[in-house]
Image (cartoon, rainbow, N blue to C red; front, side, top):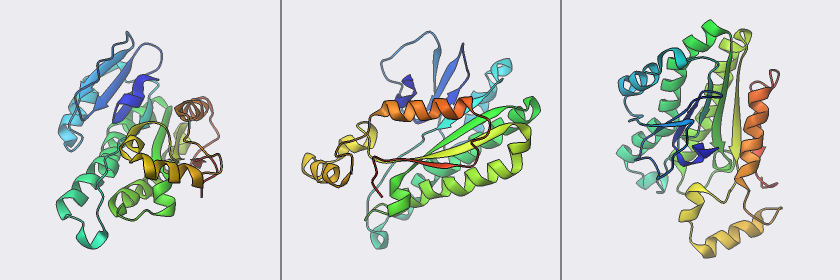
Length: 219
């Protein structure tokens, strides 16, 4: 899936893959991909972009991997950075669910996957906002299930360990080697494992409300 490049995936099966992102799109083209640059801080802009797909809003599969980070000890954490991070990582997920769920409920079909993090499970010094935002996805997911499971809508969360992609590439090599030594598998994860798990969740009807750990055995 090319969606690994984006901040939020909004997936339509077969003919259309629309990727809603908060940064300029990468230099990548595919006949089944439409890039849409959207400010996820704005409910109105996000809603306009999604509803602009019109009758393509059918058999909706939504994979959310919105994520920004900012590191500072809690007692020094800038309030504006806290608010920005929570909004992108958590509130924008609520926005998109709020927009899509009426369509899913009317069609009695929907698949939703939230991408969370091992950081929310273990805590990491300096990552209070990131951990809070990613653990907030668990409660949001559980509520989506309670309200919508009867409409053939599933919602699950993937708690990702450390993979050879994304934010991990900002970690200095010295600390990266130390991190890998603590992972029982002794290496960073392969993104293919994420994609295969997502595909399973797209195909199943009875995995619902689950928090699935993909972390190489690191707890």
